[in-house]
Image 1 (cartoon, rainbow, N blue to C red):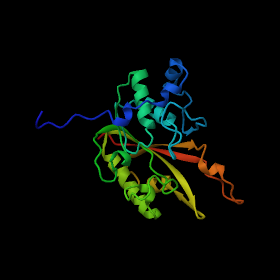
Image 2: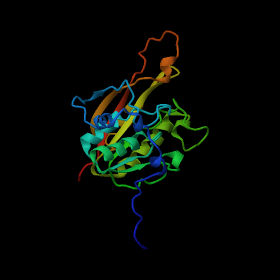
Image 3: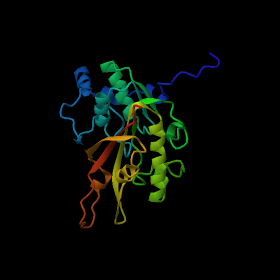
Image 4: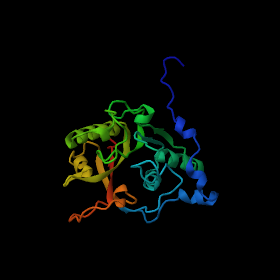
Length: 248
């Protein structure tokens, strides 16, 4: 009707494509996927990637299990992933809606769909936002797209752009809503860079810090390479920072 805002779009073209959940053996296997882990805590590790969500061939993406556990814990009805990559989070949401009847409204987008988180407003508000940004330039996601965070040459510039993305996400949360940010540490040319430390230095700009989860890293491309003897420990972890927007 003229004069009224358009309805929230909850279905995107990539969601209509056949998804890997069909690879699971039977309905019982699919049902078990969406049960909460009773041992879930601040340290998580998922050595075997679940084939039901996303594409393992998409570099830099992660298994959807942690995302699923957070949805089961916070029970949001509106969820966004503005850097969705291979669509893992959308697969999880669709599976939860199908098998648990959660009725989650989902917004998934990234640069490949024409959405630029640095400049485009999120069509919120959302009760839960998941963000898994590039780990600086460890994986280049485009050839020369200046909108791509992984094309940022200098660490201070990357941190500034990443912080702008988080501020946009935090501003799109409902009161009491949660923002989950999965980030990693980086070692480059003998120096150590911590995305988590950088984001935590902003002291509440993204909301109240509620949890820091440590997630084990597995099947990294660097694991297949041989390096000269190195004193410092290899990086085998990521952090999931959980922020909450105040209710009032």
